[in-house]
Each structure stands twice: as structure tokens, then as C-alpha cells.
Length: 93
Length: 413
Image (tube, rainbow over all chains, first blue to last red; front, side, top):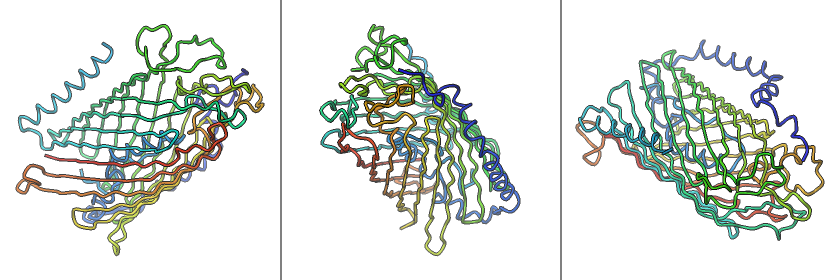
């Protein structure tokens, strides 16, 4: 057998940053705009959170069931990650 | 001896949680029982997986939650131990029965103070041919009147997989596949253990934009290192039918970013959700996922959700349906070879839904006289996979349709 392709060897973190580096500036710029807009204008007062606090608006409304479904996908597909986490409308600890 | 310490720690954690409940100090104790049934019928390669799980959590103080859980994967069916392509023909494809049982025990602690949450958890998994230890830590905070939530999480896995006892210096083209789990995790000379190290990093930003609209942006990075193939699977690599254990690169970097949102349509009293995810890894798999769902209350205690999902991915750089077709040995399809369909280009389509019944009581009005809350859920999804390039010796696989049934019962005391 021949030598492994250079693309598949070495430290994965280095390859990852190398591939993403070209578009990294644009991604960070978009994230920055998104964050600034959040800080600047998005304010829902506590008394306005009735709908957001409803379980129907939560991203992890049924977290364990969703985790099990994601496990199925990961065993039938080549990708992973980006799953929903706690949060969403509630803000009601 | 190897498993005594983590299981002992877990037992201590459960005992602590239950003792707190027993003396009546807990404000909330929750028990959650779920089962997932995955069924992939096929005349050649059917597969059935049962995934029952139990989780107990206790919140003795507002600032502390202790939880413990157990789940199992009960697998029965058939798989293809030797992968051949169209050039070698279907006569070399064989199907072997598969049965396996995986146990996973978990325990965790969550601390809360004002708008900040910190969590630590540990999990131990064992099966005949695989053992895993995982540690996870996470931190989250809310600010801007709780309109903004940021979360960071990290998990580390220390796994071991049983393999055929060949020497590491043996050429990949000569390596035998693992024929059974007999002798695994013993001193048997024809068995060895390979390590798999897993690091996952995740960051999430959840934002409420209006009183009816919220979004979530999630970024995940993963690093895997070690034996990343299936030790049982072999791939035909010679025109004469010679085969060897599948051979994957030892490292894989993975990245995913997802944006999802939920919007409540007041006129329809329905919440609609969308999700978009992009994924890339250093094996050159690029994928995209699109999700839509809608959920509404049919009754104050009854919710119905319908959902759909579309997924598409490219194949790995070293993927080939047939490695006997003259690929250069110095290229990725010569240095590595795989029979894993998840590394081939594919699309998948999902349609499904869920019914959730949720009853909430109080101190003076317990549900069924005992619970402060009770949830019952039933979900059904149909998953169809379109394998663009994967065959069993040139024939299209017959196990490309699956159903996923979920049943859940959650009770709070």
C-alpha cells in the first residue's frame, strides 16, 4: 500500500483551521453583526415572555427523546453535531 | 475490577440522591423512562434496536440537581461482514447475524446561581467488544433580561475497542477482520484493544428576538483519534476476491454549525420551527440538513407535532464502492478502504410526528394523587435513505427504510 494522502494525515485541528481559514473572516464578520444586533435591539421584557416561556417554544422541549433520535442519525449518516441545547423561549429558571 | 470504581461512584450518587428524597428535603424529584425502537426491515439484512433508558434526578435545593441514568442498546439483526463492489460481483457478499447488548450508566451534577449554570457528568459504557468512559463539563449564562443565553460545553471520551490480535506493523492489506467478540477484554492472544480518543467542543447562542420569535446558533467541533473503523468489517481489495479489514485514517476533525428558530403564529396557535445545519470534516464529507416542524396544542394537556427532515452528504475522500477497479495505491482510495455506507454519498428523508400529553398539578392538586407533573409521549418517524453509490456487490441494498418509535413517561414528585 502507498503512503496515506497528505490530506488525511497530520493533526486534525491544523487541517481544520487550514480549510476554514479562507472563509473565516466572513464567518466572524457575520457573527459579529448578528451579536451586535442582538445587543442593540432585542429586548423582550419579562412580562412579555408568556409565549416564549411555553414549553412549545423550547428548543430542547424533549431533550432525551431528541438525543436518542440524534443517536440514530449519527449511526446512519456520516456527520454529527449542531444539536439543540437547553434554551429557547423560557428564561424561567 | 476495571468497572468496579465507576459503577461504585454511580451507585453512591444514586444512593445520595434517593436518601435526600427520603428525608423529604428535595423540592423536586423526577423520574423519566423512555424507549426507542429502531426497525430496519429487509429480507437480506434486517436490523432491530431497542434503546430503553431510565433517568432519576433530584433537586434538593434550587442551586443543585443530582442525576443518574441508565440505558441499554439491544441489537439484533444481520450485517455484511465483507463488502464487495460491482466489479467483484454479488457472490462474495455474505450476511452474518448480529446480536449485541450495550449498557451505559451516567451520573451528573448541575449547579445554578442566579443566571449561571454549571454542569459536570460522567458516563460509562460497556458491551462485549467496546468500553467507554466519558466526562462532560458545561457552563451557561443568561443576560440582557434573559433574552440572551450562551453555553459552552466540552466532552472527552476515553474508549477502547476490541480488535483481532494482529501486530500494528502488519500491512493494512493483510489485516484480518475480527470474527467475533469471543475473548475480548481478556488476555486471549488473538485479541487486542485499540484506543479511541474523542474530544468534542460546543458553543451555543440562544436569542429571543420578539415575544414570539427565538433562534439558536450552535457550533460543534470534534476530534477523533485512534481506531475509527469497524473491526468486524472487511473489504474486497483484489480482483481475485482478496479482502482485508477495513482501514480508515486514525484522525478525523469534524465541524458543524446549525441555526434553528421557533416562531409562534398567534392566529393559528401553532409554533413552527426550522433548522439548517452545515457539516464538514477532514475526511472531506460535506453535508447539509434542513428541518421543519410545527407543533400546537389540541387541548391544554395535549400537543401534536409534525416534522420533516432532509439530509444530504458527499462521500469521504477515500470512499469507493469497489477498490478493485485500478485506483492508484498512492491515492486516498489505495491507502485507505472502507465498507461503511455512512461514508458514501447519500440523501435521507424523514417524516414523522409526536403526541405529547402533559399534566401539571400542584401542592394541593396532585396528578393521579401522587405527581406534581406527568408527561406521556409517543413519536413515530419514517426514515428513507437513498444510497447513491453503495452496493452489495453491484446490487442495491434492501435495508434503506427504517422506522423509529419513541415512547416516553416522565413523572415529577
